[in-house]
Length: 538
Image (cartoon, rainbow, N blue to C red; front, side, top):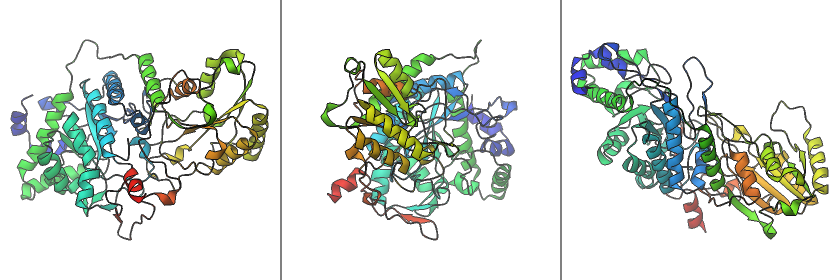
């Protein structure tokens, strides 16, 4: 593809049309020049490809969410996960993956923290870079997101984050800089929010001075979905492509060039970035376009990551690991709906439909065989539509726990805690689950609590009732098997926390956050994000 020649031969209308998507998941084609459309898909922890006529994504491997991956502190695993997702992109004819998301977990209340790696920019940048290198090893483009300051879901489309220059550079830009320089992603997605009064999509300081000139990024810069306020201002600030599509903005580009409001060289630069990216990701047509990946192998990788991410928070009297031979003919009670309905991911546009799925209960039964007597109680409701009474469920669980030799209790955050579009209002487990932990702890001296959550929760109100606590995060489709193998010592809980667990919400550095009437939010904690704040405070 002779890009310079193409640009010279294209009409103004054709150029303007390329600066907007074809739909939610593809760019426009120009048939007379043989410029093809390329396909995008979400994918921070697994391919979430949606066809234009269907909201449901195609089945794919659901890997542990990024916070879980970061808990492994293993860049080789991050590379392997990226590579595996790249293989699945090839199989589904996806050219560019929207991922990873490397934003900082500034507040533990953010609903999308499960999609982010850490509160630390070094860990976020290193894991993100390795993930991107894995994706792009397969010839698939990675689009790192969300540049920058998308640290909460509430008001994300109109909030103005006020961040001092040192904090901006050392915390919120540092992770992106590391990713750009270590992995050279094909694309960068720009966030909705404003930084210091200017929308990220119109911020030439961020897009030109820093991203292009300081970091030498030479790839595609595109907007988050419907993030454009002024397409002319965005193009002048260094943005190339608006997503999804807008006929009105295409007309505005044409009018701005004709009137001299927009220099035609700026439009040409954007078209060059778009065409360069298309040329990098389009593959030659083969006899068989159907690529096949090893689903079992990818499931095994998902289990390996889940195992390595699990953190042992407490282990009084060395209750863990359990020994199958010592449990022979003894009673093991498994309590909690999440034992059978294992949480594997959060909620939002990046949801993955798993190609296979393991729950912890079945995997434990499979592992111990018939030699151990296993009893199950639901314990609590996770669905508001359930007709089961929580008090009745608690009473039955307490009765079973009293007669058991060991209890494994599965608890965690509901899906609406870990969700795009909304933030949490507190860090506590649901009250019925906390009550269940306490009641079982009163009648059972061998209590193992298995936690499933996308980001930190408070445990101080109930930790004394548990003998052992495992943090399993949102562990993906193979999480059930990973949990079973950790519980019985087949794998070691070698994960380390990538984010701080506060004793209570009021201890967090962002607790006093307030958005004023003009949607301004001061990042008053400055550099003291996460563990930095606690180190300084102590």
